Image (cartoon, rainbow, N blue to C red; front, side, top):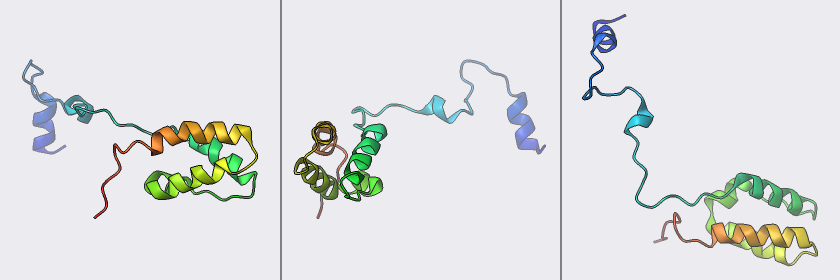
Length: 103
């Protein structure tokens, strides 16, 4: 071990000691994030595939317009379960939080 490592390991653990754990210094943002449930997205992509429609989960998460277009497409197919899943996902993709404004 180098000098720096030994000094850190031997330092006293008082009230003012700095933690080496990254999570100890993490503060939640003032607004919590609004994440899309990946299991629901997986169900959506499989149901769409059952109708011969290829949907990219990565593009759904990275491109709001693509996601909204796929959700609208799902509503045109004759599948009640797909309609319900798409409606639930719509709430995540319709929420403008987290989506950057385009120049």
